[in-house]
Image 1 (tube, helix red, strand yellow):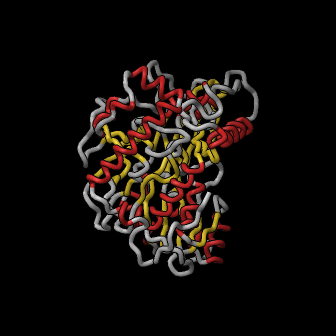
Image 2 (spheres, rainbow, N blue to C red; image 1 turned 45 degrees about the vertical axis):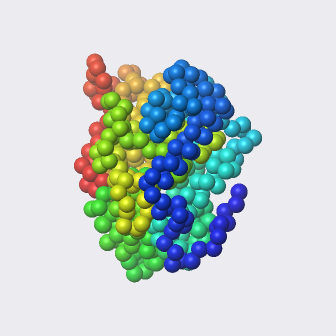
Image 3 (cartoon, rainbow, N blue to C red; image 1 turned 135 degrees about the vertical axis):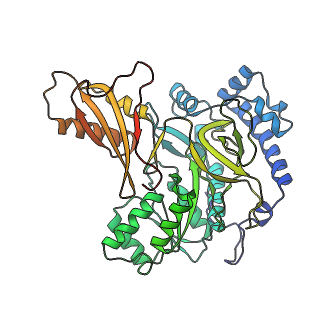
Length: 450
């Protein structure tokens, strides 16, 4: 894989690829249609799942003559991806490339505790990293910057995004999730000018610096903070508080493991998130009717990849409630802009940047014979960080130590989904029973910042 810059760029240049980024909306749509036609044909010809999926719905790639024709094609969702991976291990039959062509996988946890893989061919990976470089460039990162990547590298799709900064030419520090005190020393020693982390951790790290006698505004050199994994980066009040703490500019990014690391991000205008429109086709639909909603109105984000050959994703329902605009940005870029993620269709939680479903917990507590199987998740924000508490019940007649059982469950959860939670072991029949749908989550966060 080649991470070199395609051509030397001057730091004063506004665009990574000016012709692409400033093309007309008509050109964007024509490009999307051409890429969609080729991509659907690839999915049908190379993926056993999509051939059967399209045939069952009575559609064929040849029927896609306009962008509106995509609505004829059936949806998929996370459950489909997970189920097909289990049925046809290790990557599932959505794949349209043989394993010998797959050079990288990321993985995310699922309700079964089985990691859901996202495979990439060499070309898929290069396309992704080139987009990351373009996105960083739009946010003002330049070759003279020193960029510290503080996202998890352990199978997390956000890990390789650091290579976008390297392709751009910035000095890149692969810090990962090191302890805060050590990270602050790294930032100080190398006088890093940019960092990527979650909004809550950016706040926590700044407060930790102050407790350590470090003034983030004056003792460190951070000028740009890229955030993702939580909604805070697109909430002006949150972004402004972080910016005031650090004396730096904050840019929100959005991505999901099923596609690639970051699919949209803020330019220096910070007026919405520019979408990777040459890689992903966007639909915003009424979740009840499946019909498109007008720009500016909220709907479910549905995504179709346009180039990813390892595993095409055709009409993937993300469950995110979003809104978009097609108005040109003051920066001159003309791609669609996402105005924020307003909520979720399902009961998924985002804890410290990690996706967590109640069913992730259920698969653990119901597999432990010392527990009744009843559980409740309580989410709070303490000192600007999310804290997850899980209440469980021991079975009648159990005589062990509650602390040991709580530690065992917490350790199991951490190994499966990567989240450290406080576990409280309660007597049997303490938690309420429901005859219909049990309320498993109590989210006490009134907003991103409590």
